[in-house]
Image 1 (spheres, rainbow, N blue to C red):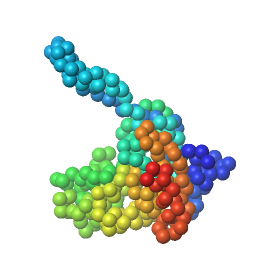
Image 2 (cartoon, helix red, strand yellow):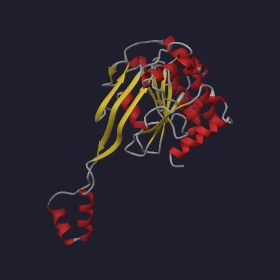
Image 3 (cartoon, rainbow, N blue to C red):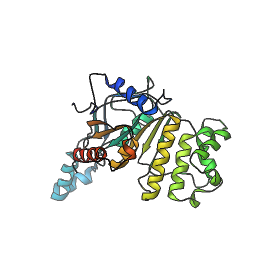
Image 4 (cartoon, helix red, strand yellow):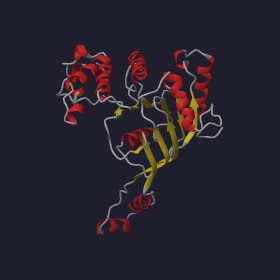
Length: 304
């Protein structure tokens, strides 16, 4: 088994395997997006905190501490490498989780897929087109709900259509119905619980009917019971709407519960350590020996 190949791989190509898994899970053709990351490497520029001018230069001549600080700052690299040669194929309708150590670049992958950033090297392709910017069919849900406090729940959910110059009240009401917030449509964010605020954020993303739904630890700050409830709701939404989902999480059980593939990433700069196929239906039985075996295996890969 190679590092970037699904654990259940055969001689079939990676895209064909992904298509087969997606068809097996959904039982029909999906409206989700096809995703291809090819040779993705990414870095961020680093700022050197170095004082210039004649006064700092004079201080370095007379002060060993100032000189040592200057030399330490000057020795820092110009770039922080985050991703290193990421190759990933995701078939329409798949639910894929990214797991890895904190700061390894998981959220960066979502930002590249959403079009918020452009890779330093490689290509990001969704439905056969290179990603060059954001688009409503690629929705991103963050860990924080980030609702506008001066707008009601309904008005927050309507932000996407309004930004595109459209008034789509039926779609807004449908999104509120899907997440169970129709009775709270006129409430303001300050009156909502954490779980309700996250539901509103999910509705704001779903109102655009995304073909690719990117989830950046959306349950990370919720209590355990609300977290489990929203996990079930996301699973139901995915099954009913057929979008492609990519979830970033630190919770291995959450990844196995929701996904049909788990991508394990290395420490920064991240590469794919293993692409693990989750057997259909396994997430419904956490006590199953295979669930526990995969959990232990992933934790071992993560160095835990």
